[in-house]
Length: 314
Image (cartoon, rainbow, N blue to C red; front, side, top):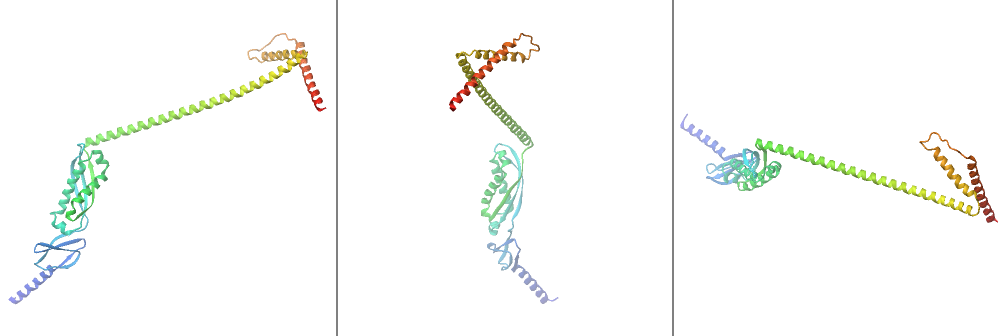
């Protein structure tokens, strides 16, 4: 091989290398920075680009897709001096390739350390109970703080999630006892409330029953008094009639009263529960005479009534 052939081969290789240096293909989801003698000049987006060899060179190749970082476990002291172990996950995306390449060294490591530091800050300002019950609040605070701090880096923090919060074993046991005591307390309160309500309902039922019973006794007493009033009125009217008969000289009226009382006394003796056999003198003539007197009074009374009606009709 002669010198000319060697020189020609060298020129061909140089041209090929030059073409490779001139053409730059940027894949989708990435951006490349271009440096002019070491100084940043522009950013190449996905596609085919051409640069000036030797004068221009590719600086940083940035991944513009959302990136995930696992936050390793670390111990955090809460506001009430409880030691907990915490880990999490960070999601971020580069929005400005130039800032992410030249404003911070090792973007992933810087983002991870910034997140871990703020986890200790945010969670250290909260009590253990808040730490375990307000995880969404912790995530929101972390996202706000870290996102604000990474703005100069051209990075957008999309999500920060706390994966696990692990208190020490003795704290877990203490919380379990506390939870059990709280459940027992609530159960006792509910049971007491139930007994109270049952007692109230029972007392209300007894009250209503007493009111109804009193109303019934009142109604019965009213009706009994009304019956006695009517009976008294009837007796008064009968007494008036008999008194008028006696005043007019009718001796049969006296016999009527005596016969009535006599017959009532015999009825009471006959119906007494402690009497099985009754032996007593009985003057039937007197009784019959008294009954006859009653008949005479009735005749005279109804007779006078008929006469009055006839005279009224005339």
